Picture (tube, rainbow, N blue to C red):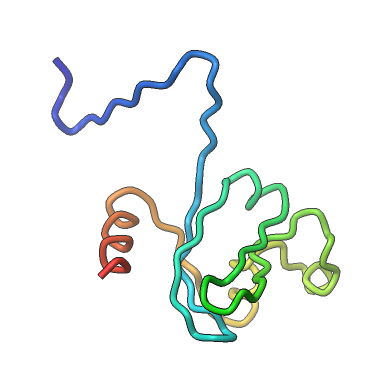
Length: 107
């Protein structure tokens, strides 16, 4: 018997588990509050562009490949770098904090 606080996941042998990340943000074009998910690999090593559910605007979240030079000239690779440069800290949260924030956002 397992401890009740332990959550077990059954993963099919040979399947690939991709760690995911999510962010909650407000579109700076139409003010729509939304949550978007993407792989951790794309955020840390690739490019992440999300489309606003309200107005369809494209938002660059991460550019680790240097495709968008205006970010790279400033030394930014992701939205956290950009916000930090502007003096705004974007927290990264895990576990219960993330679940609590998601539940609050859904309301």
